[in-house]
View 1 (cartoon, one colour):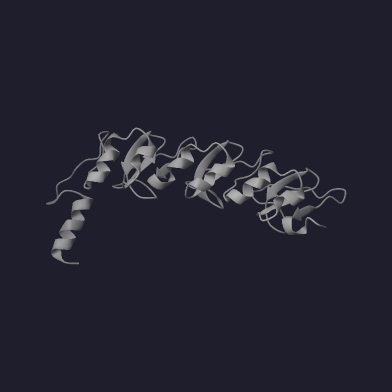
View 2: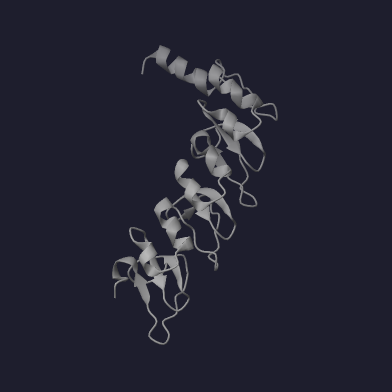
Length: 199
């Protein structure tokens, strides 16, 4: 990297000559004009086309990337509120499982009736989606069928199985349900993964 390139890169990181721009309630060092939206945004939806994210616990925008805000700024993870990067804003407002497919990295927590940023293993940031009678953490929109299935046959092309004794679909694998869910095997009522429904 040439000296000029290094100098231009430092523009993004902060002022030249060792000067400091303190991060305060007013905002952070902002180099790209497009990111000025970050200083006055009132909602996550206003951040499209920026390097900003939305801190739901502070209810404000901050410069950052998909993992966290920049410059050691913290976005507290409290009461299920997460750091949301700009392309994930829609996850804040989904009100049903099927809507999570419209945004990247968004899953549905049936027990809390809301979307969270996460992956197939669960919400990010150490957040927990409790498994209840309403269902389990559901990441793939195709698996939303699991939450409303009336019969085992409704679960084709999903990662769900059928619990005969409870009469409901559950996310799982050939051996058992996932996310600490239990399907009792009593009176010859078995856990049936979707490919075995015909049995």
